[in-house]
Image 1 (cartoon, rainbow, N blue to C red):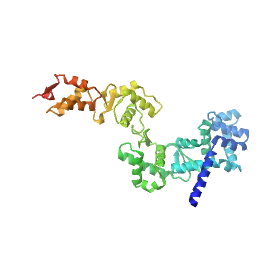
Image 2: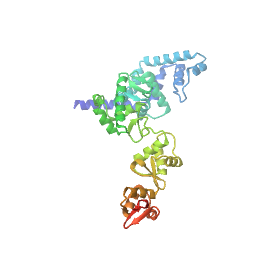
Image 3: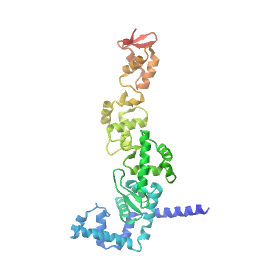
Length: 371
């Protein structure tokens, strides 16, 4: 019972702090201890007044001082803020909220854009709030530190107590899992394999699937496609860069043939990137690539589904070649309708080509295979 009461008190405190989470207003209060010049330098330097960030040199020119002097003013202003008696009470809601989000939703580390997105759930998503949040992270919250972008990691933030070495170890574990699968995997499969892995099993108790997904977001070597599948970022099915990759992923996800107009529409809805897909472009790619088979008027399927290229007569010929003893019209019709979106009359018409097909009693055979 006491634990339940304590949990309620802690939840209430957390909710109150998140309700008071207003980065831009917080900086306005903190900047009251500064001179007008100090505040202006900070706002210009970090783009905190609705304008773009200005360089030390540009601000120095404005005040007719050296860039080094502007750097000194900036550093002194930040120290002045942090040494003021009201600093800790003022910044407390932000500190607790940021630390809790990192700890509870990222196991102590998170890619910058994901962290900002989560924090902006508690306050209006404005440019001013975004820049204010970055200023807080960079200069006023001592419990967090920057994770520089590298070959393996995107830019992010972590608690000072979080081990980067451990993060790299966990990401290597995830890379090994998807590389072994040799295909995109679902969140459930990734989590199941993680908990069974030699490395993952030691850390699964302090993580969950959402934290695992957060780690993937931080990695440059791993990725997640719009359909919630995980894999190596170099895979076209995870981060599709070419039109061919996007078409393939849409068709594979649909699991059925689609018209090229619908494929283009689904590519745009998936928002793989900022580029729009246009039906003529999609159609050209479908025509030129043997991964796709035309199965109806403008309708395409994946060849890996067993669809064979060619017109209706080619499909019939392939079937009869596999069955030299002959096949009935009904069996031919059933087979072709699984391969092509056509009317039955189109199939019957193709069978009237006596140069290619011959009817022997109730079955059809290839004329070239006539005994």
